[in-house]
Amino acid sequence: MASAITTTAKGTAGLERTPITVAYGDGIGPEIMAATFRVLEAAGASLAIEEIEIGEGVYRSGVSAGIELASWDSLRRTKVFLKAPITTPQGSGFKSLNVTVRKALGLYANVRPCVAYAPYLDTKHPAMDVVIVRENEEDLYAGIEHRQTDEVVQCLKLISRPGCEKIIRYAFEYARANGRKKVTCFTKDNIMKMTDGLFHAVFDEIAADYPDLVNEHWIVDIGAAKLADTPEAFDVIVMPNLYGDMLSDVAAQIAGSVGLAGSANVGEECAMFEAIHGSAPPLAGQDLANPSGLLLAAVMMLVHIGQPDVATRVHNAWLRTIEDGVHTFDVFEEGVSTKQVGTSAFADAVIARIGESPERLTPVSYAGTGALVLPKPAFRPRATKAMIGVDVFLDWKAGTPDDLAAVLGGVDGNGLTLSMITNRGIKVWPDGFGETFCTDHWRCRFAGEGGQSVSHSQIVGLLSGVQAAGLDFIKMESLCTFDGVPGFSLGQGQ
Image (cartoon, rainbow, N blue to C red; front, top):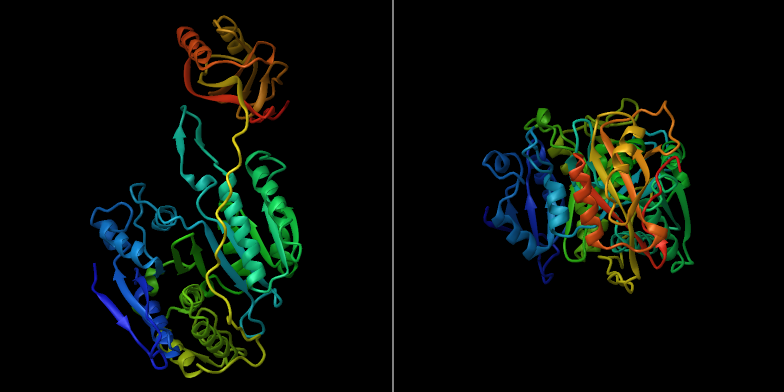
């Protein structure tokens, strides 16, 4: 672990230095981090820096997560992480460092402002100013996957009520604190009625606490189309993890460039700030990279740690630099840009404009803002839960759905009766269609007689009968009601 570094700047006398952990990363990371710190220092940031090593070198040393155990001590001590991009080696043995840090430190909210800077940077949407608030820990990113048969693998989509409450309330609080007018929710609950349905339901519940803000819900596919075509229709958008991951990149690109976007990953105790682009190894060491994404992430960090005046100075100087046409090669455009510069010279240009504000672009002010403090989710009383059946999943490829039903019909159900067979979620027995394509992965639903509750011992007996029939069961899911409401999907084709 590298030794601690302390940076001071003019105008910071008497201001207590805020400890932060910094990683210079791989590829262009060291260059854009150095440029970022020169700007922060010139603007008067007061920081006590602890440097750690992450990324490719750590991966190559045999640490599959890309971060040494000792580095966690710094992150847990400072609770603030400014991170440059890293290179993850190819291969299934290397874990995503971002996912590891987000989950280990409980960084549940990913915040990505996506702003157009027309007419100085090219965009099809000059009025775009959207903030994507993405849930950061759950959904398909739980990373729970299994190969279950020769032909089928599964990935579990996990959505929790506390997870929904935290991210949705964060989105409304962010909107209120930053003068935003509307919060929009994107889900796919017309198909995933329970998982995305929970996210939508919690959104509606929490929206009622914010009568000063407009709220709306869109199905994610048409919402994404509207975002790409008319982003000015949105303000703050909150969504589950996977949709947020994809659409925040789309939003950043249509605003002008992924290379300009910074992001915050915020939890109840810790936060991580980074550019959303990668380490770009081909550009490394050439003084070409645009440091804007990391610099704007650092602006978000300054607000979070209680240095809003410094954040305002840095952001307005950056806006003035963009407005003056001083651009790196990735956004340089003949006839619009006035000067093409490299990484270091761009930082010099921003430093030269500290204390200035843009004349045509909208100046920013972070006065009175800081880290959001949210109440912890309130856990509800436990529902009355009753188990009324079981779905047994089989690896089987010996005939038709009717053939499988005939085999299961000979199994001692121990008080449970076969009611349905599906294949990839489509009902194929009874009354299935011969045209339906089937794999070797079958869901066989057994229900208690007369809708009565069943016991675990009955299910164990059923599974013993399935095994005795020579069938390979690969998993089972209990079918339960909660306060009388079914806690399971019926399956398509019902």
